[in-house]
Image (cartoon, rainbow, N blue to C red):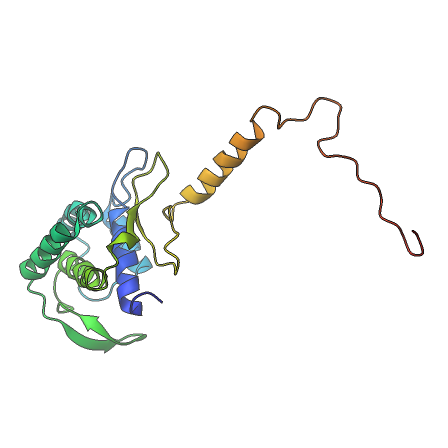
Length: 204
């Protein structure tokens, strides 16, 4: 584990929220209040959730602010994080609820959902900056994708987002290799050399 469990969950949730925004080829994933309900349920958000249009608009507005964290240098990341913590009056404290053991909260459970999303993401980024691990925040390397990536692998090897880009790029690379001159078999000929059968029991 690279970070504390709650930090890793918060980082993944922040990336997932950013990636709900429409992109060059991706549609808006938070079109309706029901879409936001599903996102909240998927990521286990607890506390106040009004299920109103104003809440949906505020969550959408948070996404570009968080996305900037993946696009700027360390000093600007710190400015963004500190700004979010100040704006939403973060007050770190240890809490235990539901299936979670003690972990860090920095807003009251009655705070608006967008505020809690912002502060949880900001607190997770505090650990990233303090640990000198900003290089783990990346943009998907698929040429037609701009989703953000949190690389929590031990060897820092994750290059693609969680939307299937890795599989798409591997398939494209395979097709490209297959189409290279000299790689296709001539019609009517075997694609692999004929191998002599191995000797059976008692054979030479």
